[in-house]
Each structure stands twice: as structure tokens, then as C-alpha cells.
Amino acid sequence: MSYFYLALAIAAEVAGTSLLKVTEEFTKLIPTTFLVIFYLISFWLMTLALRDLPLGIVYAVWSGLGIVLVAIIGTFVYKEVPDLASIIGMALIISGVVVMHLFSKSIQH
Image 1 (cartoon, rainbow, N blue to C red):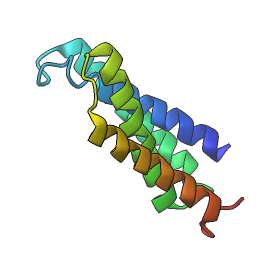
Image 2: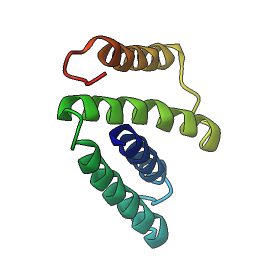
Image 3: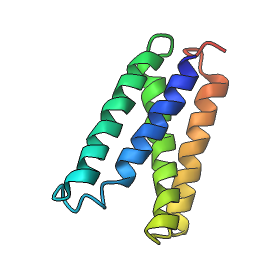
Image 4: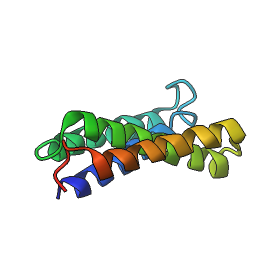
């Protein structure tokens, strides 16, 4: 169940972060309100994931996958296509998360 909560936390964080540009520096009330709601939901769901998973692992997965997903959304929604260096960097982030999950002794497999 912890990974389910973590996946939902990532989805909420990505939704909130994706709204940052639309808030126009927090001057637009509706997108700003949704951004805050998504962030609150994300942090609450992270606390549920932390019942069984270590903090460092949860945060690494949450932030790492969030970065990649936000970049993908930025590509399609905002037409902000990442360059080769960005793609390589994101591949390294994903590789790091995979290595942690496969080889870390701090994760219950």
C-alpha cells in the first residue's frame, strides 16, 4: 500500500508543479488554489508512504520521478522540449531510482 500512496503523492505533486506556470506568479486565484491543494495532498500521501518506507527512499523516488514527469508534461503542454543533456540527466535520475530499488538494503523487497 505504501507504494500506492507514493505513486499518488507523485501524481499530486506533478499536477501541482505543472500548474506553476499557469498561476502567473500566484496572481491567478484558481490555478494557485489548485496548486496548493495538490501540494497538500501530495505531502499528506507522502506521510502515508513513510509508514513503511524510509524517508530518503521516498523523497528520492518522489522528487526524481516528479522531475521526469514534469519535464514530459512541459514538453507536451508548454512546448518546452528538453535538449540532449536534459534527457541524459533524467535517464540518470531514473537509473538511480532503479538502482536504489534493486540493490538498497533499506528497502523491504
